[in-house]
Image (cartoon, rainbow, N blue to C red; front, side):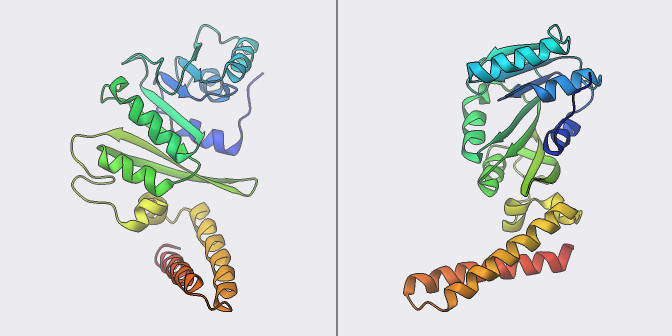
Length: 239
């Protein structure tokens, strides 16, 4: 039986280049490698996880779908158990931005410079993008989905010789680090929804802060007001 993926996992799977060998870091149940091999989009995969329990579950699911020859499981802290050149696509998704950066930093020597990375940090998006910029990675594609009330931005990244997150030698702007250049420029509908929600929440916070008179709340009010004006500006320009 063909496996069915959630909206978030489907979007991630769609970012993988056809014909690539996949290393799924933090594979959990192994659903993405199973789906990609079932559909013939990739020839093989490594399903890797730091937890023995999730890895055993992945092994069971892989076997149930008759894919034990195509998909190998490996106990691994990040990319520690990945051999250089074993994968063409490295997927790191469903974890905090700090952990994503830690995995990339500790696994840097495993990269040959030819792999594509598909990243879906759950937090600290601006910090992750800044890390990518500083370590000579370039974002070549972005997507975003909403599922069960949560928003999931994701990106496809390649190593590059020159600094420039979106274009060679061009530092990313604050709004690009925070929200993603391609999501904004393409007027991505989910990003539009996210900005409207963020604007509404911040307007509510600002109104509550206005009735308080401490120096601390005044400083916080200024921060919130900046965020409100930024969201309004982005919605006006791109949506």
